[in-house]
Image 1: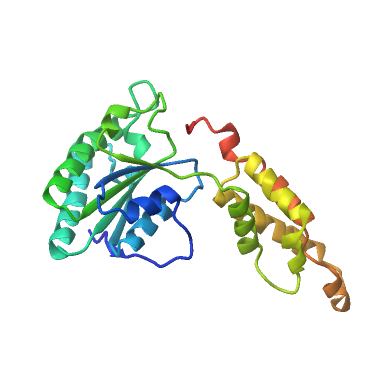
Image 2: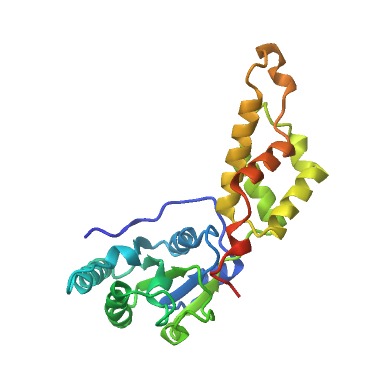
Length: 268
């Protein structure tokens, strides 16, 4: 199973906590990275790998599950064998392994867990400990929508994990994301980004707890609304029509309330 690849360069930024971690000489080998959906947890794991010039692998817990007897443990064993093999072949380089949907194996009885997840858990948690003991150049980043203090989560299983929280965007980040996803062109007046209406809209997104993924969808929906408004407009008059904050408002209506606003996966 070829899990590992070179990390892909990106222009994104790590959270302050992640930056501190990536630049630390005392690097934990097991990390629990949590936050609302759409905050870029997997992307953050890639960035940590990039900061460390590490190889990167990613797998979802659901990909390791199976309803068939012993199949889950065989998948997990194959997964760890590939990690150990890669670690041995690259002894002077870090390997960052991202395990998504980690909360699915941490749910307490009666909190929505299932037998397939239990099979993965019984193989995955001991396997992580065994690999980190054997291969000091391997770092596991487990991502989850759940706070480690959430009542549905077995916090005892996370005792050895360093905990990093991925925050929702603040106003500055929301404005930067909107600007990036709105794109550039004659259809946008640069002054719109300096307007009070734009600032107020970004603040509205922060207050509404919109994630970076939702902001991307919102900007895309707003752009489609703008393009629809141009239908029937003569070519000579196109320059008179500009993308304004009103179209972002249209995009916001299209995607509805932020998932974090009513999300049962409470983050502390």
